[in-house]
Amino acid sequence: MHAAQKTADEFPTHPKGKRARILLTSVFGPYAQDDEFGSRSINPMELYHNQVTRAQGSFSLRMFHRSWGIMLIQANISAPCTVLDFPTRPDFARELKQHQYDVVGITSIIVNLAKVREMCRMIRSLSPNSTIVVGGHVAAIPGVEHMIDADHIVRGEGVSWMRRYLGEDEKAPVRHPAIVSGMRTRIMGIRVPDRKGSTAATIIPSVGCPMGCNFCTTSAFFGGKGKFVNFFETGDELYDVMCRMEKDLKVRSFFVMDENFLLHRERAMRLLERMKQGHKSWS
Image (cartoon, rainbow, N blue to C red):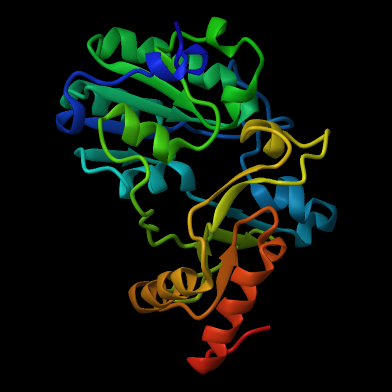
């Protein structure tokens, strides 16, 4: 029985608890290839060029974004945890062979289902004692538990699930990792130099959406209409996170990844108040 099917009383826990060795990984590259795992047209793996600025053609921004979900999980569990982001197949195979992981977690978007299936096969072959956990939007595919060989399918917010799975406090405060919003930026084929502080940091105040539009996978994925998870309830908490990132990453701008950040008006207005008090620029 997969994790998504279990009742609260049957929630899975790992026998090693906090001592379990964890590997969290995104799907392997190369991306946007016409091969057995997809095509250039359906999985280019780019937020901007594939979605936000796709109509701008050659003037579109081209960049990659880290797998924020697994970074957030890593920062919020005490078990030893390795993150492998954008690996090649040989990278992934080497990691499995060289280390004995108790749990291997895979995150993916829906179009990369074939890669998730292949990674599950590789884990069974190269690290047969590892428990396989699959999350991310690929978990929203109806019947996905019958399409891939995974032990647990995690739908929705992953930090509390992994904490609970490892016997940790699922309600403990969330620690926000230092995340740069984009990397390997190109425009018109020219690579933009990577300089510390030149790219905005990413802030994730919450996941889900309380609006529940019937066409939106976000609402469905995080529990449906009216359901959302606030990682930070107050503007003061967010301000402290932003100040820490400002210091650690040398940034002065922030990309807020939240479906409805301004819908939580009290939190947003308190953040603005703190920014004014701290003489921070805002727009």
